[in-house]
Length: 385
Image: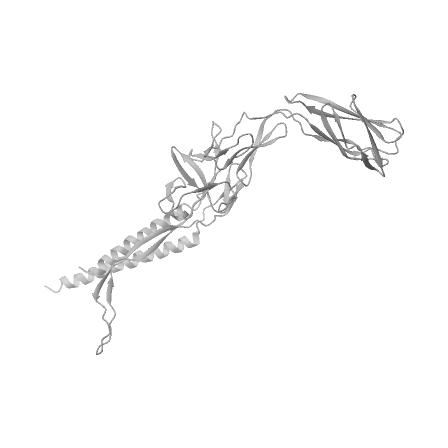
């Protein structure tokens, strides 16, 4: 039987695979985080018709004569180039700007994906569209141990921010040097104890012949100024709170002295959340506090093309992918996160349609080999009539 007949068959099979891969790329042109694939061909076995010959004194050397036996698929490579950014405005939609994969858990299996279209289920756990659980590290007392074991990322809906006792306060502004002796200015600030109970701290400033006196009703401190600058003292203790006075000035006309702040707060409940570029899930509480609740984990591979596709835009580690290096976003070899955006498919439609034409013509040409070989066989059978 003619060798060309089977060479044509191998060409049909190989170009059919190219058509399959190209069709799958086009079908996933709008799949979030999809990575296009490309077929690589290589020659099949070759049959030696005549061996090579070493050059002799009376005869020259000859090259081998070989007939190829067709083509076969050498491999199907995945293109992990960055896809375009699609802004969604949804805070749980995440895009990896750079290399890396999200780590998710499906049952007992750990998988990896570039599709960052996440949400929260009824239990407050961050999940993918098909229900896989997003992995990371939970915060302990507002601290993240990124070297620890991974766990499910969850949003503690009933979380509270603990109360903090007021220990320091700060006064800033100007006390007028041209005020009459005996003039007073009263300033109040709300402070908290360790349980979050609020109370009022009142400071009264009284003009004296040498400067200003400040008192909370129990203790009095005298402030002195030189050319408008405070010369002493720079603080006072009122009701167990250390009040910083170093920013107070004593120029004329201005009565701008005020309580600039204090470090205590009442307990607060969780109001909202945001996700930072390093994958930290940050909660905003009703008492004005912001605390890290958890941090997403990302994984990188020495050879991402060695990953095995597991469906649902997810991958599992393969024999040639290397072990995953897990770390936070922005670590060495891992990209940062963009909240409110998704990574689009990196399929290039112009290239895919060109590949479609090439595959189609390659299939037709190999089909022509078969029909031509059949015509030759027909001629052979017609020799005997």
